[in-house]
Structure formats: structure tokens, C-alpha cells
Amino acid sequence: MYILDKKLKIRLFFLSLIFPISLGLIGLFKTINLHNITTLYITIAGILTGILINFICYNKKTFTILLYRTPIPLAFAVLIWWISNIFFENLYALLFAIGGLLLGLWVNNEITKPLHFYKIKKRILAIIYIFFSIITINYFIKFPAINILLGIIAGNYLSIRAMSNYKVELQINNSFIQGSLYTSIILFITTSISFIIAIYDINNSITLVNSILHTSVNKTTLIILVISGSVFIVILQYFITLFTAKTMLQVWKTKRFGRYLIKVNK
Image (cartoon, rainbow, N blue to C red; front, side, top):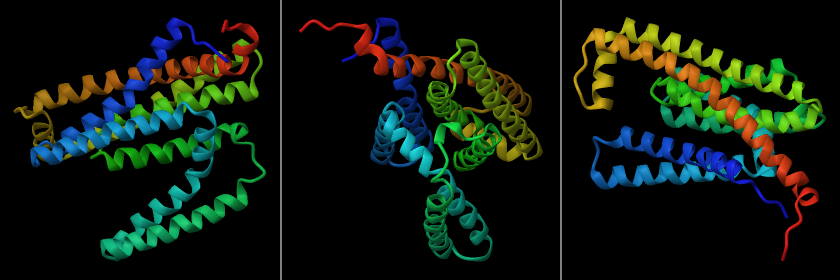
């Protein structure tokens, strides 16, 4: 049996709130102009989805299995769906995407068997992270702030990877810093691209921001909001990734070694 110390419990509780609150707010903002009951249902669905993601992230075995089996099938499904949408209607494109998912599952089963999931080369991980960043920003109306959530998943992965690969504290810290810097750099690139798109199509960008914030902004205000918001979320991405990695490393260590270090009185 293991016991988490008070500070670690607080840090873990903070992390456990991020996904439910974020996905609940996304559901609220995306449906706020619809019927009140529909908005309520979608918001609750977002919160429940966040709780489910928490369960996946903080259960080491489930997290490993899903993350190990997800990238290749999802990549096949999304890429085939995007290509099919150019030539076919949505229904046929969806069928092609399902075929791509099945093909990806087969390919994943064939080529990933010999690999140890937490010993995959960093350059491969970098490509996987870029791909999921593109998917996330494309799905959430090209709003890069949502990619911060990927930093939490990346931090969780880094914590387990550190336990599997590194024994020296300095190596672990360097790994966490490198991973956090990388997630921040990718977010900086995506926010820069989003900024260029927003300025290029300034009128539609203003309309979109007005619909989300339910207020009226002009071109100057929009540019200030985008620049200040971009700087803030890039910095936040670094710290949230690092915070997650360090917190979850303590959690995994406590679960693994706690029974040897703490004697629980019955």
C-alpha cells in the first residue's frame, strides 16, 4: 500500500482538474449559441470525457496500452480521411477513414511488436507529437491554446520514460527540460502559423473571436490579444509539461516504492 504526501496530493488534484474543466469549457463555447439543453449536455459530455482521460493518464497500464496502440492507426485514419474528403462526399470519406483505421491497426501490430514503448527514439516521438498537434489544432477551430492539453500527456509520458531509461537525477531533469522546451517550441510554431492566418483573414478572425467572447473587438485589439495570448500559452506550455512530468514521476515512484518506505498501521 502507498500513501501520497499532502503536497503531492494537491499537485495531482490540480492536474486532475485541467482536462474536465478545459473540455467542459470547450463544449460550452462551441455550443453556446445552440439550445440551452444541448449546450448543457455537450458541456457535461466534455467534463465526463475529461474525467475519462484522467483515468487513462493516471493509470499507467491503460495509458501505456492506448498510447502504444494509437499513433499509427489514428495517423492512417486521419490522413486517408483528409485525402478522401477532397474527392468524395463525407459518408464515403468516413468509410475510407474506417478502412484506414483498420489498416493502421494491422500495420501497428506488425511493426511495433519488437519495440519497447518507452525506449522509442526521440526523433520518432517528435514526429508523433507534431502529428497530434496538427490534428488537435485542426479539430478545435484552429485555436492553438487547446494544444496545451497535449503537453500534459507529453509530461505524463516523459515521467514514465524517465523511470524506464534514466537512473541519474540530472539525466531525468535534462530529459524533462528538453521535452518541455520541445512542446513549447511546437506550440510557438503553431501559434505563429495561426497568427499569420488570422491576420491574412482578419475579418473572419474578428467574427470568430466576437462569437467566442460575445463582445466586439477591432483589428488592433485582436492583434494585441493574439500576440499576448500566444506568448502566455507558449510559456504556460513549458511549465505545465514540466509540472506534469515532475508530479507524475513522484506518483509513479510512490506507487512502486511506497510499500517499502512507508509502513501503514492497520
